[in-house]
Length: 322
Image 1 (cartoon, rainbow, N blue to C red):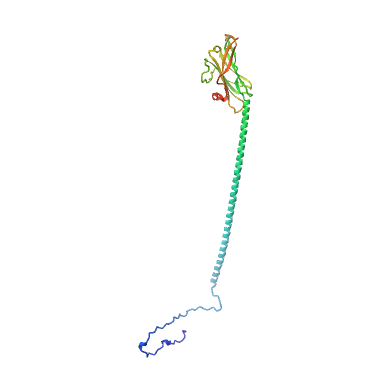
Image 2: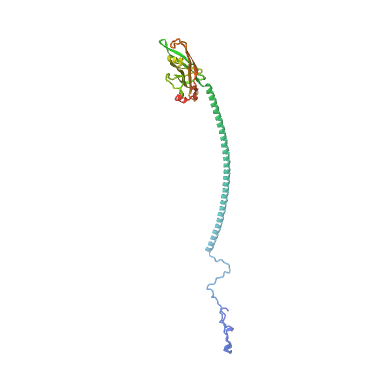
């Protein structure tokens, strides 16, 4: 029902015939009245021409927001592209670095192998050179030793003992014994120094463990002996002792030593030692003091103290400080 239409009571609620008995009346439900909303105080205005009534500032704001969104999207895309490119570049660089590292490791391994081979070759060459040098040194040493052994000075007693009588008041008082040292080598000696000794012993001869001391009757002398030459050592024997030796009451022993240097540098001090027993002493007359009496004897080597260089027991003692 429109608001401007006149109200007419519904027939359902019009007065009825009340002639019916009261008991036949039935109760009725109350009437339902529909809810009608009030009219709007400011109904929206229609825009039949399609004109956009949005304020300009709002449009500009929306456009600016859209532009910002577009720029952000572009920036985000660029950043993603740049990040992806950087990641790809980093991955490529990492791969290149890994490849380079592998190549460097391979090259280093090859270099180490080559270096090891070179070192082994150098070691082998060095060992070969050392062997060659050692062989050369040994050969040189052998040659030098052979040369020294052939050409070195070599001093020994000749096994001959002569004498000169010492005469005083027409009597022989002493015999100056002469024992020559002979240089059998082809080079001279230097700084030769020698001493000889004599002594008379009872019939049993040299005592046990005799150390052949220097008696001190003759002082050591220093001299030079040329190659194939002689150097004579001397000592005086009183004539009375000659009588004891002739009679056999005493046995006559002579011993001595010589130290010297040969001409070769770096060679040790040389030593020669000897020991003789003078036997069968005979004179041409019973008067051994007569200047006209001649004397003879025989020379026999002792069982010991005939040696050379380091084979002598007292080599160190004799050569020390020489």
